[in-house]
Length: 521
Ligand code: THU
Image (tube, rainbow, N blue to C red):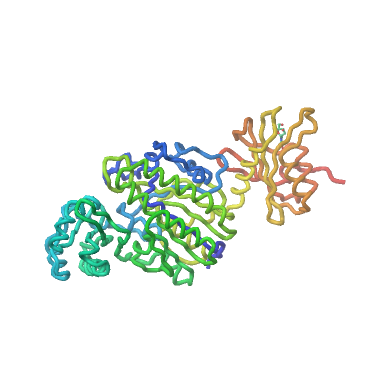
């Protein structure tokens, strides 16, 4: 059994926030698609908190602004499933890879399906084409009111959508029709979702209501939700997660009307003492802006999320892990309203999370492997856990030393040095070099860190990381000077580990290597 080192995981999906085309995007008609790049061109985008976590450090996203001292771990993940739908994206993220895309019906549903649907509902069918959801009620709403026939339409997604006026077909009846449709739509007709699309109003002024409901197809194999639930963890859904998994594997669900409510509920849950996964989907990005090709609206919604995120980060506890990701792309500036085949970004944050950049991963399923391992639940799946990299101490110490460089007072040499000293107590003391106009009173970064630690009562030291470079740019190693080595010799054993930052990572030495035959009394 894996050690359970996290108590709660918040996995937030910003629906359709793609991080650039996948190598096979052309096969999906999405060459050059890049949702985040399209958003970056909007004046409405202001995302200081996502940048603080390091979103701009993700490979290929430097246009969002890189961050030398990110607070989160980042990477981007490719999709191995053969699709670009929300359902398939969420399934893969939950550990299940789909070899076949869910079926789409660009020419409408076959007559045999419609005949069966009409037979069991006792109502005729209007439209039966791919259509915009707002246009379809404008064009067919009046006829629907007059005849009672149901408006059936689809989209580029694998969906069977039924629109009906709430005063013509009561909500519960519409939901019942959807369940009946769900039972017919199996096998080669197994669409991802049957969606109830109720509306109200008068001809010329129809509007859709918040009573949309999705009836999803069940995932073909066990997901991380099933595994977590079977291991008695809480599995909480906020937004359409419950729909995407057809209700399976969840212990509590909170349907939402959109992003604002989703964020509000998630803020409430951060104060609840649960043990397990809180899985959130914020759908507005995709539904209101991506599909409608509204880059400014999309950017403004992301700005709003970012503002909320600032407050949320502050509420997270010691044993929490936050993951922010997406499920596919939906570039608002490409030439279609359809989803786009893109990488998804991943930002991971928590007190125990080391702000590492773990590059590019080959499957969304790495999220499932990481979440389940973090919560101490065995779940063999197609993904590889990132937990080791996310919680590796040496990398963390190295990055802490790099961050400490920013406080350097080095007006005379211009050489900035940072150190991070890990003590037996588990605490990390950082230090920077502090120069003086009289030169000789200058302090090195390592000795600043030691002075802070020793004066706080620390006497046991596990390892130190050192980073330095002219103008704060790390070009090579910054090994400790002789005086600092002698200070280390005063307090540390010969096997004390000294981690020297390189531009990319670090190398590790022992004190005895660096100071053989040090002076002792
Ligand atoms: N420096 C350190 O902080 N640590 C070392 O081990 C080597 C040197 C600082 C001192 C000075 O402010 C600058 O680097 C240039 O010598």
